[in-house]
Each structure stands twice: as C-alpha cells, then as structure tokens.
Length: 195
Length: 133
Image 1 (cartoon, rainbow over the protein chains, first blue to last red):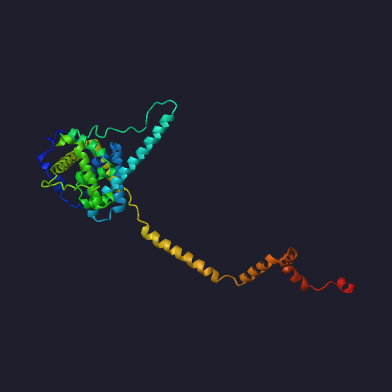
Image 2 (cartoon, rainbow over the protein chains, first blue to last red):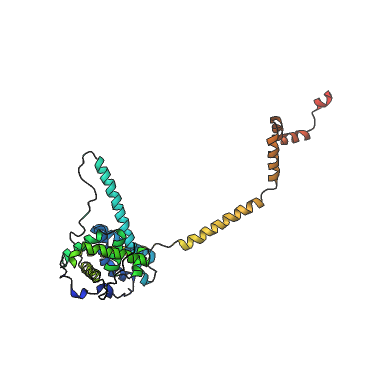
C-alpha cells in the first residue's frame, strides 16, 4: 500500500471539515452528490445501483424534508441513503438466492446468474494517484459487518459528528462509538501495510 | 464485551495507528470523490435535477388525522343515538317474539295472522249463517 499519493494537506481532514450550511436544498445536494455516490458505490459495488440509490435519496429528501432546517438535511440525507443501500443489498441477496435456486433446477444450466456482482472498483478513479490504496480500502470496508461499515463510512469517510452519525444510523451515540471502534480495529488488521 | 475507546481522529490522540488510518482513509475518499468520470458526473447531475423537479409529495397527515377523528366521532354518536331513538313498537315486537318461542305451532299460526282475525271479527256476519242459527 502506497500512501505517498495522498497529499499532505489531507492531514487532519477528518476533524477539519467546517460545517457550512447550504442555502438551498439544491446547493446541499450538489455539495454532497459526489461523496454520496462514492459511499453508495462502496456499499453496493455497482455504479448503476449506486446512482439509483443516490437519486432515490435525493428524491426522498426533496419530497419529504425540503422544509426542514438546513442543519437537519445532512443526517436526514445520509440516513435515507443508508437505508436505501441496505434495501438494495437485501434485494440483491434475495435475488441471488432465487436465481441460484432456479439455476440449480434449470434444464440447460447455461447462462449463469442474472445478477453478476461487479468489481466494486474496476474503475474507481483512474486519475487519482492512490487508486490501489482506495481499492484496498473499499474492499476492506465492504467486508465489514453492515453496522460497522455504516459507522465507518458516515463518521470517518463523510466526516459526520457522532450525533449526526447516530441520527443517520438510527441508534445512540454509544452504539456509533462501539461500531466505529470495532470497525477501526478490523480495518487495522486488514490494512496492516498501511502502517 | 467492553468496547474499546473510540479514537477521536486527531493528531494528539494516543491511538496513533487508528488516527492515521482514519486520516488516510478520509483523504483517499475525498480524492476519489473529486475524481469521478464525466459520464457518472453527468448522470449524477441528471439524477439531482430529476429529484428536484419531481413534484413534492403533499403531506396528508394534517388532513387525514382530523378527518379520521371526525368520522370516528360521527360513528360513535350514531351508535349511541340510535338505540335511544328506536321506534316505540320495538319492545312490543320483541315481546311477541318471546311469546312465540314458547307457543305450539297452531298458536304460532294464529299469532302470525292476528291482523286477519281482527279484520274478520269486524265483518258483518253473512245472512245464511244468521238464518241457520
């Protein structure tokens, strides 16, 4: 793992993000869409599914929570996206089981499963220097249990504070800390060569 | 199992390894988020535009809750009001029914034709019947 590609100004980024409230919902969505896509892609491992999840989260935020105060948009949006990712993961799992079962009783045995899990980061970001490092990170994060993965993505990658992470995850602050602590421990083992 | 303390991800945190991991992960994520291919970006913009142009779903809760409460109140009033204003003949009918339960079949027939016998009693007797007597 080569972290030399990570620019030095990234030091302290996690804690340094200033919470600037967007003026309009469109501004908020424009600010958050890229990171939302990356989070969804990391959770789902598929570009099309990730785009669907992000669009659905945007739509629901617009339809149901547009009138809410701007400071609530972030936890609401990430909470919606988190649930959407979970729904898609479950639906995909059921579909894989059904397709696998149908495939096992099929007469010709050709064609294979309809849903083929894509390489999550076959083309993660061609232009970034830390492409391999990001791919390793994404694989390690995807291997985490769901709640640990959510806590890590929201708290560390997106940079939400503990309270907003708890709101987005629908749990207590203490649960967030526990999930995150376990996620960090697991990732440290998986990404040994980051040291 | 007691959870281990959560690192705060700052430079002064004692768990330097966790803090470094978080910092590097966040940095990589930020860079990857900035470098998204043009096609995906175009689709993201289209998704945002579609979401924002969709009609807002009206929140029907403020309307449906009072309407439901009103309907329930009207139904409750109707249930309470109806027995109080039932027709006065109802108890008599119920009494007749109760009597019928204990009667034999001929009495039942007669009871069911009380109107007929009432009418018959009011009719003048035929002349042939009177002369026979």
